[in-house]
Structures are given as C-alpha cells and as structure tokens.
Image (cartoon, rainbow, N blue to C red; front, side, top):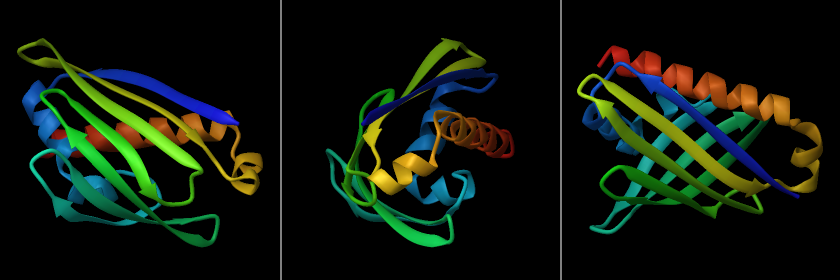
Length: 141
C-alpha cells in the first residue's frame, strides 16, 4: 500500500540558509529521529548519493538515497533500503527576506511487517519531530 507524507512549515530564517542546511546530507543524523549516522558517499554535478543508518524497533537499517539538488528543491529517491520504494521532495520557498516556507512531500511503500506496525499517526508524529528538530538546529547555526 502506497502511503504519503505532506507537511509544511514556515520559519523566520533566510531561504538560502534553510536550503543549505537541508542540502547538507551529513547533517541528517542530527535531526532525523532514530538516525545514528549520515554519510555522503558520492557527489556529482547532477546528484549526490548518501547513506543513513537507523536504529528503529530494535533493528538497524541502512537507507541509501540519490538526491537531486536544484535551485530550491531536493528530490530524494531510495536506491537501497527497507522501503519497497521511497520518493520524496524538499521544497524551500522564500516568502520574504526573513520568512521561508519548508515543504516536504513523499510517497513510499513499506514492507508488510513495518506497514502493519506504523500507523499514519506514528508517521505524522515522526515527521513533526523531524521538522521541529531541523528548525531547532537551524536556529543555532
């Protein structure tokens, strides 16, 4: 079953600062819940390949993704990992000089066991924690 995530939040930060923080793959471990390690494996002109290491439900998971960076968007596609498939997108939009809109959308399919364990409420809560941790880290940069 394909599931979707769609959330947005405005922050009182410069849009370029926000984009640069999200684009730094190495920072992901500092704000994604359960992420123990984030490593940039490959950097090309058109894309980056990164790997995230998670501990979730007493088990370790590795997710390798291809991230395509453009002017205000980061598209994410799982290359290897626990999802049957995962496609996501960060979009950073300048509202004015001091306000930025952060949007994250994803569609994914979990393996049957994880799908049964993770309700939409748990997934939405995870996303809320992620974005709030990111905003907290952003304000300290």
